[in-house]
Image (tube, rainbow, N blue to C red; front, top):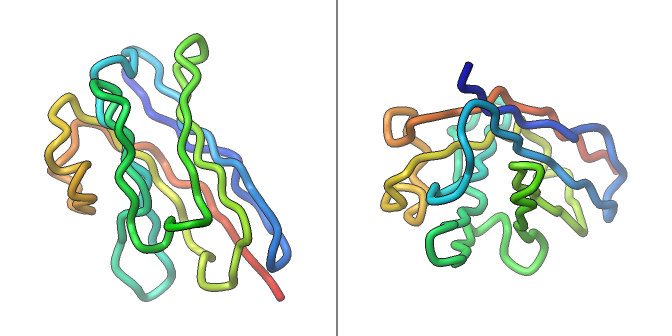
Length: 128
């Protein structure tokens, strides 16, 4: 069964850090563009980061600049989102996506149909 699973969310204080994981089963990330997105209550989904595994480039959305990084572990078929200096406005459900065509990911499109796979989200709550 093909599946994408985001995990690692939780509650953290302002200024803290979290590392989210996006793990694939049923396919390998090699050749895919992997995106991280988030959706806060009452707001539209927004792009956070995209990793294009074909060329190793990372594309940063506004929420990620200077605070978030993305990395991968091919052996575990997992992509990580490291989030530092967290703020209350980072509170959201975080999702990961994957597609072999990197175009929409590199443009951080949050549209469901632009990706082949979406994972279930993981909640991140940042409190002051």
